[in-house]
Figure 1 (cartoon, rainbow, N blue to C red):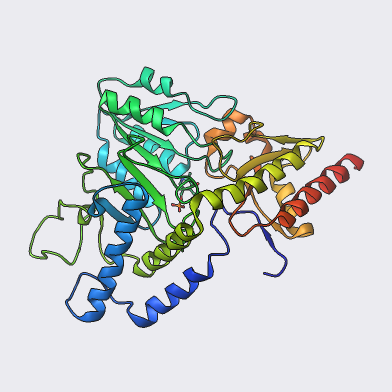
Figure 2 (figure 1 turned 90 degrees about the horizontal axis):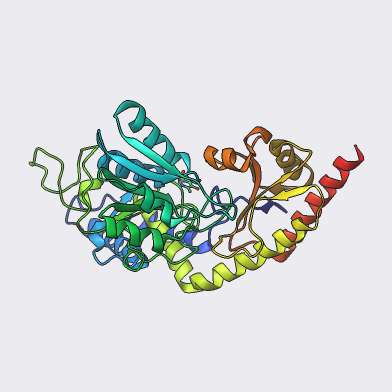
Length: 388
Ligand SMILES: Cc1ncc(COP(=O)(O)O)c(C=O)c1O
């Protein structure tokens, strides 16, 4: 859309790198058949792309066995496989108030219907969970710690290495919801003592919708909560135990895998640090500009350390939704308003009663001009509100 300023990259990245569009197109035209089902050339070629993509993603997280990278449809799907496949009656899980509903709702379901006990660690005034809080909450029946790596509301990146060390010492599995962080900040399974990483392809990995995945470290077993065709050992009655088939069911989103492959390739070619620096420079510019405005409350710490390019704010006299409508209607700025599927963050911030927050999230294709326009737009809205 012409002249659109897209600041909703936390919902999904847009646009995608040109290479993602062209590779998905050529994949479907040139060899887009069902992989792993037959031995003809096209099938082998498609299978090779899937295997190569598994390896790329496993390597990206420093996982040493690409077969333990399972494709899913998004991170919600991956997180459901983890939560329903690991917890059973009498188990205890620990999570944080920073979570997205893709973690909160499966946990609520299990606690309401299946006798799973859940503790929620709050974040501090800077937006971080304290690793020692996890240590204090771990008990004999704690099976899983599951945390949002980078908040989709306030953008803080949690101290995963310190939390991971505690989990490892206590023999509790750590699962990371890397929906917002994968592709923006490096994730190292070994160094950070992470047992499971869940990703979605369409956000910071710059791929299409409908593709995600999870990496499961050796020694961690997730029960089957689904069963079906895998294309392998079809006479076997029970769903396969070995990874990646254990957590893959039916024909996957192979064109999605192709797009994700191209997205990840693009990130690696550009360099994750360079992309991060670009986005954080713009994020600083945005927060510096908004801080100057009397009547705007920003929900982030001053120096933006351990942060991604996602920020939330409120215009004090305006419901979040109305601010978003003005930004869209008057300034052609696309951002998101509301609770962002993370209701506990707003309960803690006190923004729930204001209809949540306005969230601006920056991607690799945003420019300084986009940010200048966004600051000016918010400034005009604030001034207009004052005159009313
Ligand atoms: C932190 C976090 N977790 C999970 C999700 C769910 O992602 P998806 O809808 O792709 O499954 C999101 C999406 O906004 C998110 O921001």
